[in-house]
Image 1 (cartoon, each protein chain N blue to C red):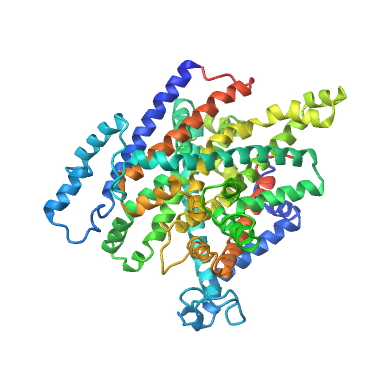
Image 2: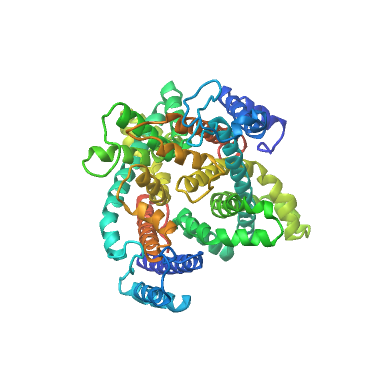
Length: 306
Length: 302
């Protein structure tokens, strides 16, 4: 197990290195620089700016210098928000994004498993058909449609919830629901399929023959095995929530890292963009590793990797 | 084989019930409207007019936008872009995914292990985010390249071309996984062993014996990749990094529509109509994919 974790850790570092390098050179090869918008800049002044923001020298020199600073945990300056460093910007915005993502993550997994289990227990009833149709609908409608529609109905028309922003817990409800919606549906579908498969197996028949109540059969015996496909979806789920939160933060005017990500592309703000990408990648790969460690522990039938 | 593509597959699909038929009809309607609709609308619908933000009426069933353009016309031309990107992107993903899965599954052993590890890594990286950066970096270069290639007409479409290519490049993973799994199961079957013992080349075994048996699975995942690519494209366009004005796709129309929702005055038709058409299309495609999976995918036996 330890060698497995160590090996994964090494491969994570390698992947991270590749991603950072790729983003760096992609960003530097984009047309125009971050200082193009300054009006009629004197060559000396432009050079001074470039030195100050580490944009001087050849791309290769910039790259090695950047990597050196990264090793010291310095993500560099932002060319757009000039009096702040990327570290400061991320420290400010990341907790907001993380809170939104965590709420949506819990909502998606708990809601999805419960809905899917419920649908499987009522196989063949109109309730199951309805739940599964609703799930397909929720998967098909993108979040940037449901978000504004929910705002239109619950914030503007009914006035129950705030339009946007990130303050009181009431302002969390709409964004978290919008973000989690499609994944509640996806996990419900996963759970239902695997639950139906498990419920047909012999040991479930034994449990029923013992006279166990149906809800106990489902929640104590079947759920343990039926949940495995959901566990292996948790990694991709985190990736999707991360990408999705960029849109949600734009729609609901949430001061998270996602908005900075989009703006840093449009503004050619290299270090900020690279900083956000690094944080996203580390988060994702860390979560994936956790899932991979948890999986064999949950499923004793699978031998742990070596 | 029971999962072969033949008349009975079609019959089994139809026997799945009314919802499958409705999905097929809805899809056909959207495609027909996208192809022929813009030509059938009166010429005035294409022009900008002074009639800003007009609510839906007989003259403008979907209302008009900021520039007084007919929304029905815009939604239909947007459908052309979105459907083209979805279909072409899914086809690219299909070619890459099938080839990759075939090779990995057939080669087996260490090659297979390494190739599938690479797929796993790609799953764990925020691909769409890196794609955004790549599109930003390559767009102007693509324009220059297309112009140099002597295809000035294509320059206006460079964004679309780049979107198709790049979305195809990130959506092939699931296809590769599925195809590889199928090949692993198939290659130990007797007809493959027989072909091998008769001395057939690897290429012939792959194309003559394995590929035809994969058609069912591949069609299912092709159907499911199209809505995924359409969603990706609309996501990029929504963020302002995909299709750009004056061209429109469903995503960019929805971005405009979402901005038109505010506490002062809500032009709801800018959001609701593109949202409805897009959602119906995606729902129909997903539903059809599910139904096809029930009929064609051998792993999903009832």
